[in-house]
Image (spheres, one colour):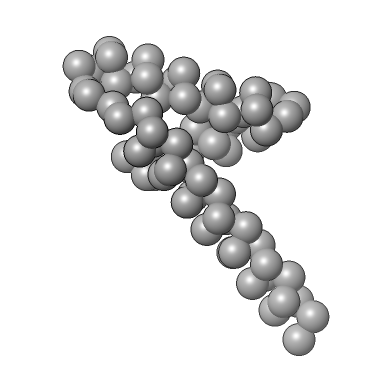
Length: 70
């Protein structure tokens, strides 16, 4: 589920201009996909997963920047 969420977040970066619109698009896509396969989704847990994924990506970018300065 997390890899699917990250994939949607990457797509949202290309499709949407601001963060609120990106998050809304990702949530709608997950909910629609879950309904299609009859999979129950806890939207509050999903939101937490999305925030965790964003933190990981920022951490990776920070580490890459730090490496480039060494």
